Amino acid sequence: MIAVIDYGMGNIFSIRNALEKVGADVGVIAQPKELDNADGIVIPGVGSFGEAMKQLLPFEEKITSAIEDGVPFLGICLGIQILFERSQESPESGFGIIKGEVIRLPDNVLVPQMGWNELNIKRDTDIVRGIEDGDFFYFVHSYHCVPKDKKIVIATTEYGTEVVSVIERDNICAVQFHPEKSGVKGLLLLKNFLRGIKC
Amino acid sequence: MLARRIIPCLDCDLGVPGGRVVKGIEFKQIRYAGIPWELAEKYYLDGADEIVFLDITASHERRDTMLTVIKKTSKNVFIPLTVGGGIKSIEDARAVFNSGADKVAINTAALKNPNLINQIADRYGSQACVVAIDAKRRYESVEGKEIVKTPDGDCWFECSIYGGRRFTGIDAIGWAEEAEKRGAGDIMLTSMDRDGTYDGFDIELTKAVSERVKIPVIASGGCGNPDHILEVFQKTRAQAALAASIFHYGEYKIEDVKRHLKGRGIHVRL
Image (cartoon, rainbow over all chains, first blue to last red; front, side, top):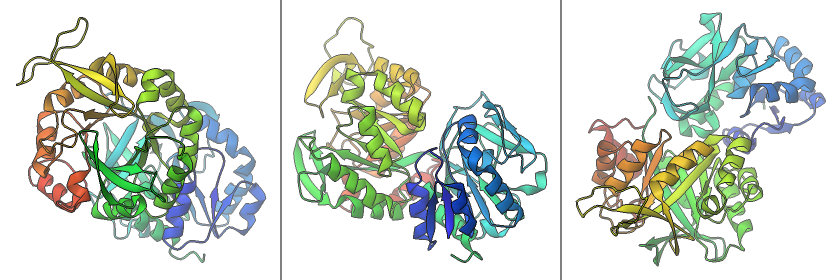
Protein backbone atom coordinates (compact mmCIF):
# COMPACT_ATOMS: atom_id res chain seq x y z
CA MET A 1 0.00 0.00 0.00
CA ILE A 2 1.18 3.50 -0.89
CA ALA A 3 0.37 5.83 1.98
CA VAL A 4 -0.64 9.34 0.95
CA ILE A 5 -0.51 11.52 4.03
CA ASP A 6 -3.56 13.76 4.39
CA TYR A 7 -2.52 16.44 6.86
CA GLY A 8 -5.00 19.09 5.83
CA MET A 9 -2.78 20.95 3.37
CA GLY A 10 -4.50 20.99 0.00
CA ASN A 11 -6.64 18.31 -1.57
CA ILE A 12 -5.30 14.81 -1.99
CA PHE A 13 -7.82 13.71 -4.63
CA SER A 14 -5.57 14.49 -7.56
CA ILE A 15 -2.53 12.62 -6.26
CA ARG A 16 -4.67 9.69 -5.19
CA ASN A 17 -6.36 9.51 -8.60
CA ALA A 18 -3.04 9.79 -10.40
CA LEU A 19 -1.36 7.05 -8.31
CA GLU A 20 -4.37 4.78 -8.84
CA LYS A 21 -4.25 5.50 -12.57
CA VAL A 22 -0.71 4.08 -12.70
CA GLY A 23 -1.72 1.00 -10.73
CA ALA A 24 -0.99 1.77 -7.07
CA ASP A 25 -3.01 0.54 -4.14
CA VAL A 26 -3.43 3.87 -2.35
CA GLY A 27 -4.29 4.45 1.27
CA VAL A 28 -5.04 7.98 2.39
CA ILE A 29 -3.57 8.26 5.87
CA ALA A 30 -4.70 10.69 8.53
CA GLN A 31 -3.25 8.81 11.57
CA PRO A 32 0.49 8.28 12.13
CA LYS A 33 0.06 4.62 13.19
CA GLU A 34 -1.43 3.79 9.78
CA LEU A 35 2.05 4.36 8.35
CA ASP A 36 3.22 1.04 9.84
CA ASN A 37 1.85 -0.91 6.88
CA ALA A 38 3.08 1.45 4.17
CA ASP A 39 5.21 0.09 1.31
CA GLY A 40 5.78 3.66 0.14
CA ILE A 41 5.01 7.12 1.50
CA VAL A 42 3.84 10.17 -0.44
CA ILE A 43 3.60 13.65 1.08
CA PRO A 44 1.74 16.06 -1.20
CA GLY A 45 0.66 19.50 -0.10
CA VAL A 46 0.09 23.10 -1.02
CA GLY A 47 0.23 25.94 1.48
CA SER A 48 2.63 27.49 3.97
CA PHE A 49 5.72 25.74 5.30
CA GLY A 50 5.05 26.61 8.95
CA GLU A 51 1.47 25.36 8.87
CA ALA A 52 2.61 22.15 7.14
CA MET A 53 5.24 21.49 9.84
CA LYS A 54 2.64 22.01 12.57
CA GLN A 55 0.21 19.61 10.92
CA LEU A 56 2.97 17.05 10.27
CA LEU A 57 4.33 17.11 13.82
CA PRO A 58 2.42 13.97 14.92
CA PHE A 59 3.75 12.13 11.85
CA GLU A 60 7.37 13.24 12.14
CA GLU A 61 8.73 10.30 14.14
CA LYS A 62 7.03 7.66 12.00
CA ILE A 63 8.07 9.34 8.75
CA THR A 64 11.72 9.76 9.70
CA SER A 65 12.02 6.21 11.00
CA ALA A 66 10.32 4.80 7.87
CA ILE A 67 12.75 6.75 5.71
CA GLU A 68 15.70 5.42 7.78
CA ASP A 69 14.30 1.91 7.31
CA GLY A 70 14.47 2.42 3.55
CA VAL A 71 10.76 2.82 2.77
CA PRO A 72 10.48 4.61 -0.61
CA PHE A 73 9.41 8.21 -0.10
CA LEU A 74 8.05 10.78 -2.53
CA GLY A 75 7.62 14.43 -1.57
CA ILE A 76 5.61 16.74 -3.82
CA CYS A 77 5.70 20.57 -3.80
CA LEU A 78 5.44 21.42 -0.09
CA GLY A 79 6.43 17.76 0.37
CA ILE A 80 9.95 18.47 -0.97
CA GLN A 81 10.38 21.63 1.09
CA ILE A 82 9.57 20.11 4.48
CA LEU A 83 12.51 17.68 4.07
CA PHE A 84 14.95 20.60 4.45
CA GLU A 85 16.29 22.22 7.61
CA ARG A 86 14.45 25.52 7.38
CA SER A 87 12.51 27.88 5.14
CA GLN A 88 12.49 31.65 4.74
CA GLU A 89 8.70 31.37 4.74
CA SER A 90 8.23 30.45 8.41
CA PRO A 91 10.23 30.21 11.65
CA GLU A 92 9.34 26.51 12.16
CA SER A 93 12.12 23.98 11.52
CA GLY A 94 11.78 21.45 8.74
CA PHE A 95 12.54 17.73 9.09
CA GLY A 96 16.20 18.40 8.29
CA ILE A 97 16.55 15.05 6.50
CA ILE A 98 18.13 16.96 3.62
CA LYS A 99 20.77 19.57 4.49
CA GLY A 100 20.00 23.01 3.13
CA GLU A 101 17.23 25.58 3.13
CA VAL A 102 14.17 26.78 1.28
CA ILE A 103 14.29 30.34 -0.05
CA ARG A 104 11.92 32.72 -1.86
CA LEU A 105 11.89 32.89 -5.65
CA PRO A 106 13.73 36.00 -6.92
CA ASP A 107 11.99 39.36 -7.38
CA ASN A 108 12.66 39.56 -11.11
CA VAL A 109 9.94 37.01 -11.87
CA LEU A 110 6.25 36.77 -11.06
CA VAL A 111 5.74 34.95 -7.75
CA PRO A 112 4.22 32.41 -7.34
CA GLN A 113 5.48 30.55 -10.36
CA MET A 114 2.30 29.05 -11.80
CA GLY A 115 2.31 27.07 -14.97
CA TRP A 116 4.19 24.67 -17.23
CA ASN A 117 7.97 24.83 -17.18
CA GLU A 118 10.81 22.66 -18.47
CA LEU A 119 13.16 20.26 -16.74
CA ASN A 120 16.90 20.29 -17.31
CA ILE A 121 18.00 16.79 -16.42
CA LYS A 122 21.29 16.83 -14.52
CA ARG A 123 21.57 13.15 -13.74
CA ASP A 124 19.78 10.24 -15.35
CA THR A 125 18.34 8.06 -12.63
CA ASP A 126 15.35 5.74 -12.46
CA ILE A 127 12.95 8.45 -11.26
CA VAL A 128 13.37 10.37 -14.54
CA ARG A 129 13.48 7.33 -16.80
CA GLY A 130 11.65 8.18 -20.04
CA ILE A 131 11.65 11.88 -19.18
CA GLU A 132 13.77 14.08 -21.39
CA ASP A 133 15.44 17.47 -21.19
CA GLY A 134 12.82 20.07 -22.06
CA ASP A 135 9.79 18.05 -20.95
CA PHE A 136 7.23 20.28 -19.24
CA PHE A 137 5.80 19.89 -15.73
CA TYR A 138 3.21 21.92 -13.84
CA PHE A 139 4.55 24.19 -11.08
CA VAL A 140 2.81 26.20 -8.35
CA HIS A 141 5.19 27.61 -5.72
CA SER A 142 6.70 30.75 -4.20
CA TYR A 143 9.74 29.18 -2.48
CA HIS A 144 12.39 26.79 -3.74
CA CYS A 145 14.90 24.37 -2.25
CA VAL A 146 18.65 24.90 -2.05
CA PRO A 147 20.35 21.65 -1.02
CA LYS A 148 23.93 21.77 0.35
CA ASP A 149 24.83 18.57 -1.44
CA LYS A 150 24.46 19.29 -5.16
CA LYS A 151 24.90 15.61 -6.01
CA ILE A 152 21.31 14.90 -5.03
CA VAL A 153 19.98 17.28 -7.71
CA ILE A 154 18.43 15.27 -10.54
CA ALA A 155 16.77 18.11 -12.45
CA THR A 156 16.49 21.88 -12.38
CA THR A 157 14.13 24.42 -13.93
CA GLU A 158 14.86 27.97 -15.04
CA TYR A 159 12.62 30.55 -13.39
CA GLY A 160 14.50 33.75 -12.59
CA THR A 161 17.14 31.48 -11.12
CA GLU A 162 18.04 27.81 -11.36
CA VAL A 163 15.26 26.15 -9.36
CA VAL A 164 15.87 22.63 -8.06
CA SER A 165 12.92 20.65 -9.37
CA VAL A 166 13.85 16.99 -8.66
CA ILE A 167 16.08 15.54 -5.94
CA GLU A 168 16.92 11.95 -5.13
CA ARG A 169 18.96 10.38 -2.34
CA ASP A 170 18.78 6.69 -1.58
CA ASN A 171 15.08 5.93 -1.00
CA ILE A 172 14.07 9.61 -0.95
CA CYS A 173 12.65 11.26 -4.04
CA ALA A 174 11.11 14.70 -4.13
CA VAL A 175 9.84 17.11 -6.74
CA GLN A 176 8.91 20.80 -6.67
CA PHE A 177 6.25 20.48 -9.39
CA HIS A 178 2.96 18.56 -9.38
CA PRO A 179 3.35 15.24 -11.23
CA GLU A 180 -0.37 14.57 -10.67
CA LYS A 181 -1.15 17.66 -12.77
CA SER A 182 1.64 17.30 -15.33
CA GLY A 183 -0.07 15.16 -17.95
CA VAL A 184 1.35 11.86 -19.19
CA LYS A 185 4.94 12.78 -18.23
CA GLY A 186 3.79 13.39 -14.68
CA LEU A 187 2.14 9.98 -14.57
CA LEU A 188 5.36 8.49 -15.94
CA LEU A 189 7.32 9.96 -13.03
CA LEU A 190 4.83 8.45 -10.57
CA LYS A 191 5.15 5.12 -12.36
CA ASN A 192 8.93 5.36 -12.02
CA PHE A 193 8.53 5.93 -8.29
CA LEU A 194 6.26 2.89 -7.97
CA ARG A 195 8.63 0.61 -9.85
CA GLY A 196 10.07 -1.90 -7.46
CA ILE A 197 7.53 -1.19 -4.74
CA LYS A 198 5.08 -4.00 -4.16
CA CYS A 199 1.66 -2.43 -4.09
CA MET B 1 10.35 30.12 -19.16
CA LEU B 2 6.68 29.26 -18.70
CA ALA B 3 4.89 27.84 -21.71
CA ARG B 4 1.96 29.69 -23.20
CA ARG B 5 -1.15 27.64 -22.57
CA ILE B 6 -3.92 26.33 -24.78
CA ILE B 7 -7.12 25.84 -22.83
CA PRO B 8 -10.25 24.21 -24.21
CA CYS B 9 -13.38 25.55 -22.56
CA LEU B 10 -16.35 23.29 -21.98
CA ASP B 11 -19.61 25.13 -21.42
CA CYS B 12 -21.80 22.69 -19.54
CA ASP B 13 -25.57 22.54 -19.54
CA LEU B 14 -26.40 20.49 -16.49
CA GLY B 15 -30.13 20.64 -17.13
CA VAL B 16 -29.64 17.60 -19.35
CA PRO B 17 -29.30 14.39 -17.29
CA GLY B 18 -25.60 13.83 -16.57
CA GLY B 19 -24.69 17.11 -18.26
CA ARG B 20 -23.77 18.09 -21.79
CA VAL B 21 -21.12 20.35 -23.27
CA VAL B 22 -22.74 23.05 -25.35
CA LYS B 23 -21.57 26.07 -27.24
CA GLY B 24 -23.41 29.32 -27.53
CA ILE B 25 -23.00 31.94 -30.24
CA GLU B 26 -22.64 35.49 -28.96
CA PHE B 27 -23.87 34.21 -25.59
CA LYS B 28 -27.18 32.95 -27.06
CA GLN B 29 -27.75 30.03 -29.47
CA ILE B 30 -26.85 26.55 -28.30
CA ARG B 31 -25.33 23.52 -30.01
CA TYR B 32 -24.48 20.19 -28.31
CA ALA B 33 -20.89 19.02 -28.34
CA GLY B 34 -20.57 16.02 -26.00
CA ILE B 35 -20.36 14.57 -22.48
CA PRO B 36 -18.21 16.80 -20.20
CA TRP B 37 -15.79 14.21 -18.74
CA GLU B 38 -15.37 12.38 -22.04
CA LEU B 39 -14.52 15.54 -23.92
CA ALA B 40 -12.21 16.68 -21.11
CA GLU B 41 -10.27 13.40 -21.25
CA LYS B 42 -9.96 13.60 -25.02
CA TYR B 43 -8.52 17.14 -24.77
CA TYR B 44 -6.15 16.07 -21.99
CA LEU B 45 -4.81 13.27 -24.18
CA ASP B 46 -4.58 15.69 -27.13
CA GLY B 47 -2.22 17.96 -25.15
CA ALA B 48 -4.45 20.58 -23.52
CA ASP B 49 -2.59 22.51 -20.80
CA GLU B 50 -5.67 23.02 -18.66
CA ILE B 51 -9.41 22.35 -18.86
CA VAL B 52 -12.11 24.87 -18.05
CA PHE B 53 -15.67 23.83 -17.21
CA LEU B 54 -18.21 26.63 -17.17
CA ASP B 55 -21.62 25.81 -15.77
CA ILE B 56 -24.02 27.74 -18.00
CA THR B 57 -27.17 26.08 -16.67
CA ALA B 58 -29.80 28.78 -16.43
CA SER B 59 -30.83 27.97 -12.88
CA HIS B 60 -28.07 27.00 -10.50
CA GLU B 61 -29.93 24.39 -8.55
CA ARG B 62 -27.82 21.64 -10.01
CA ARG B 63 -24.56 22.16 -8.17
CA ASP B 64 -24.39 18.49 -7.26
CA THR B 65 -24.38 17.59 -10.94
CA MET B 66 -21.34 19.81 -11.47
CA LEU B 67 -19.58 18.19 -8.52
CA THR B 68 -20.23 14.77 -10.06
CA VAL B 69 -18.85 16.00 -13.39
CA ILE B 70 -15.70 17.24 -11.62
CA LYS B 71 -15.23 13.96 -9.73
CA LYS B 72 -15.60 11.86 -12.87
CA THR B 73 -13.23 14.12 -14.79
CA SER B 74 -10.50 14.15 -12.17
CA LYS B 75 -10.26 10.34 -12.25
CA ASN B 76 -8.79 10.45 -15.75
CA VAL B 77 -7.58 13.98 -16.41
CA PHE B 78 -4.16 14.91 -15.01
CA ILE B 79 -3.83 18.59 -15.85
CA PRO B 80 -5.21 21.58 -13.95
CA LEU B 81 -9.00 21.78 -13.94
CA THR B 82 -10.81 25.11 -13.58
CA VAL B 83 -14.50 25.33 -12.76
CA GLY B 84 -16.69 28.40 -13.09
CA GLY B 85 -20.33 29.40 -13.24
CA GLY B 86 -22.53 30.10 -10.26
CA ILE B 87 -19.81 30.06 -7.57
CA LYS B 88 -21.11 32.60 -5.09
CA SER B 89 -19.25 31.96 -1.85
CA ILE B 90 -16.19 30.41 -0.25
CA GLU B 91 -18.42 27.42 0.61
CA ASP B 92 -19.30 26.93 -3.08
CA ALA B 93 -15.59 27.16 -3.90
CA ARG B 94 -14.72 24.61 -1.21
CA ALA B 95 -17.23 22.09 -2.59
CA VAL B 96 -15.69 22.47 -6.04
CA PHE B 97 -12.11 22.04 -4.73
CA ASN B 98 -13.11 19.08 -2.62
CA SER B 99 -14.47 17.37 -5.72
CA GLY B 100 -11.08 17.62 -7.43
CA ALA B 101 -10.98 21.01 -9.16
CA ASP B 102 -7.71 22.98 -8.97
CA LYS B 103 -9.05 26.47 -9.65
CA VAL B 104 -12.35 28.27 -9.52
CA ALA B 105 -13.35 31.01 -11.95
CA ILE B 106 -15.56 33.71 -10.50
CA ASN B 107 -17.23 36.56 -12.34
CA THR B 108 -20.62 37.81 -11.11
CA ALA B 109 -19.93 36.97 -7.47
CA ALA B 110 -16.55 38.75 -7.59
CA LEU B 111 -18.04 41.93 -9.03
CA LYS B 112 -20.82 41.91 -6.45
CA ASN B 113 -18.51 40.97 -3.58
CA PRO B 114 -14.84 41.66 -4.49
CA ASN B 115 -13.75 40.35 -1.10
CA LEU B 116 -14.50 36.82 -2.34
CA ILE B 117 -11.30 37.06 -4.38
CA ASN B 118 -9.30 37.74 -1.20
CA GLN B 119 -11.06 34.93 0.64
CA ILE B 120 -10.37 32.31 -2.02
CA ALA B 121 -6.78 33.47 -2.57
CA ASP B 122 -6.03 33.51 1.17
CA ARG B 123 -7.51 30.09 1.80
CA TYR B 124 -6.51 28.20 -1.36
CA GLY B 125 -3.75 30.35 -2.87
CA SER B 126 -3.73 32.76 -5.79
CA GLN B 127 -3.18 29.95 -8.26
CA ALA B 128 -6.63 28.62 -7.34
CA CYS B 129 -8.46 31.89 -7.99
CA VAL B 130 -9.30 32.88 -11.57
CA VAL B 131 -11.27 36.06 -12.09
CA ALA B 132 -13.36 35.88 -15.25
CA ILE B 133 -14.26 39.13 -16.97
CA ASP B 134 -16.86 39.34 -19.75
CA ALA B 135 -16.14 42.64 -21.49
CA LYS B 136 -18.08 44.52 -24.13
CA ARG B 137 -16.91 47.45 -26.23
CA ARG B 138 -18.64 50.77 -25.62
CA TYR B 139 -18.00 53.44 -28.22
CA GLU B 140 -19.96 56.21 -26.48
CA SER B 141 -17.62 58.14 -24.21
CA VAL B 142 -18.28 58.02 -20.49
CA GLU B 143 -16.32 59.98 -17.92
CA GLY B 144 -13.72 58.08 -15.94
CA LYS B 145 -13.43 55.09 -18.28
CA GLU B 146 -10.19 53.95 -19.85
CA ILE B 147 -10.31 54.74 -23.54
CA VAL B 148 -8.61 52.30 -25.92
CA LYS B 149 -7.89 53.08 -29.56
CA THR B 150 -9.20 50.44 -31.99
CA PRO B 151 -9.54 50.30 -35.79
CA ASP B 152 -13.28 50.75 -35.23
CA GLY B 153 -12.85 53.88 -33.14
CA ASP B 154 -12.10 54.74 -29.53
CA CYS B 155 -13.95 52.66 -26.96
CA TRP B 156 -13.95 51.51 -23.35
CA PHE B 157 -14.77 48.05 -22.10
CA GLU B 158 -17.71 47.35 -19.82
CA CYS B 159 -17.93 44.33 -17.49
CA SER B 160 -21.05 42.25 -17.72
CA ILE B 161 -22.46 39.72 -15.25
CA TYR B 162 -24.96 36.87 -15.26
CA GLY B 163 -23.50 35.31 -18.42
CA GLY B 164 -23.77 38.53 -20.40
CA ARG B 165 -27.34 39.26 -19.42
CA ARG B 166 -26.64 42.35 -17.34
CA PHE B 167 -24.19 45.24 -17.53
CA THR B 168 -22.45 46.87 -14.63
CA GLY B 169 -20.95 50.15 -15.86
CA ILE B 170 -17.62 48.91 -14.46
CA ASP B 171 -14.49 49.40 -16.54
CA ALA B 172 -12.89 46.03 -17.37
CA ILE B 173 -9.28 47.28 -17.34
CA GLY B 174 -9.62 48.86 -13.91
CA TRP B 175 -11.43 45.81 -12.60
CA ALA B 176 -8.67 43.48 -13.82
CA GLU B 177 -6.16 45.61 -11.90
CA GLU B 178 -8.23 45.44 -8.75
CA ALA B 179 -8.69 41.68 -9.10
CA GLU B 180 -4.90 41.29 -9.29
CA LYS B 181 -4.40 43.40 -6.16
CA ARG B 182 -6.93 41.26 -4.31
CA GLY B 183 -5.04 38.09 -5.11
CA ALA B 184 -6.39 36.68 -8.38
CA GLY B 185 -3.96 34.28 -10.05
CA ASP B 186 -5.29 34.56 -13.61
CA ILE B 187 -7.64 36.86 -15.49
CA MET B 188 -9.90 34.99 -17.91
CA LEU B 189 -10.82 37.75 -20.32
CA THR B 190 -13.73 37.12 -22.68
CA SER B 191 -14.71 39.53 -25.42
CA MET B 192 -18.48 39.52 -25.66
CA ASP B 193 -18.24 41.17 -29.05
CA ARG B 194 -16.18 38.29 -30.42
CA ASP B 195 -17.51 35.29 -28.51
CA GLY B 196 -18.86 32.69 -30.92
CA THR B 197 -18.04 34.75 -34.03
CA TYR B 198 -14.89 32.89 -35.22
CA ASP B 199 -13.47 36.34 -36.14
CA GLY B 200 -10.45 36.15 -33.83
CA PHE B 201 -9.72 37.48 -30.36
CA ASP B 202 -10.26 41.13 -29.44
CA ILE B 203 -6.61 42.13 -29.72
CA GLU B 204 -7.08 45.66 -28.37
CA LEU B 205 -8.92 44.43 -25.29
CA THR B 206 -6.42 41.64 -24.62
CA LYS B 207 -3.44 43.94 -25.17
CA ALA B 208 -4.81 46.63 -22.86
CA VAL B 209 -5.51 44.25 -19.98
CA SER B 210 -2.40 42.09 -20.36
CA GLU B 211 -0.16 45.17 -20.33
CA ARG B 212 -1.83 46.45 -17.21
CA VAL B 213 -1.60 43.39 -14.96
CA LYS B 214 1.38 41.17 -14.17
CA ILE B 215 -0.67 38.02 -13.64
CA PRO B 216 -1.43 35.84 -16.68
CA VAL B 217 -4.30 36.86 -18.92
CA ILE B 218 -6.26 34.11 -20.67
CA ALA B 219 -7.58 35.47 -23.97
CA SER B 220 -11.08 34.24 -24.76
CA GLY B 221 -13.84 34.79 -27.26
CA GLY B 222 -13.68 34.63 -31.04
CA CYS B 223 -11.10 31.94 -31.75
CA GLY B 224 -11.86 30.49 -35.20
CA ASN B 225 -8.51 29.00 -36.26
CA PRO B 226 -4.91 28.47 -35.07
CA ASP B 227 -3.75 31.75 -36.62
CA HIS B 228 -6.03 33.63 -34.26
CA ILE B 229 -4.14 32.07 -31.34
CA LEU B 230 -0.84 32.93 -33.00
CA GLU B 231 -2.01 36.52 -33.48
CA VAL B 232 -3.06 37.00 -29.85
CA PHE B 233 0.26 35.54 -28.63
CA GLN B 234 2.30 37.70 -31.02
CA LYS B 235 0.46 40.96 -30.49
CA THR B 236 -0.38 40.83 -26.78
CA ARG B 237 1.10 39.58 -23.52
CA ALA B 238 -1.67 37.01 -23.06
CA GLN B 239 -0.20 33.88 -21.48
CA ALA B 240 -3.01 31.56 -22.51
CA ALA B 241 -5.67 31.23 -25.16
CA LEU B 242 -9.05 29.70 -24.54
CA ALA B 243 -11.13 28.17 -27.30
CA ALA B 244 -14.19 26.01 -27.56
CA SER B 245 -15.81 25.51 -30.93
CA ILE B 246 -12.66 24.95 -32.98
CA PHE B 247 -11.88 21.91 -30.82
CA HIS B 248 -15.41 20.66 -30.11
CA TYR B 249 -16.39 19.95 -33.66
CA GLY B 250 -13.13 18.32 -34.67
CA GLU B 251 -11.92 21.10 -36.93
CA TYR B 252 -8.55 21.29 -35.20
CA LYS B 253 -6.67 19.06 -32.80
CA ILE B 254 -4.90 20.72 -29.89
CA GLU B 255 -1.63 19.03 -30.72
CA ASP B 256 -1.75 20.32 -34.31
CA VAL B 257 -2.49 23.82 -33.09
CA LYS B 258 0.52 23.64 -30.78
CA ARG B 259 2.81 22.42 -33.58
CA HIS B 260 1.58 25.32 -35.69
CA LEU B 261 2.46 27.74 -32.89
CA LYS B 262 5.82 26.16 -32.10
CA GLY B 263 6.80 26.31 -35.75
CA ARG B 264 6.23 30.06 -35.57
CA GLY B 265 8.34 30.67 -32.51
CA ILE B 266 5.74 30.46 -29.72
CA HIS B 267 6.91 28.68 -26.55
CA VAL B 268 4.37 25.90 -25.98
CA ARG B 269 4.38 22.51 -24.30
CA LEU B 270 4.44 19.68 -26.80
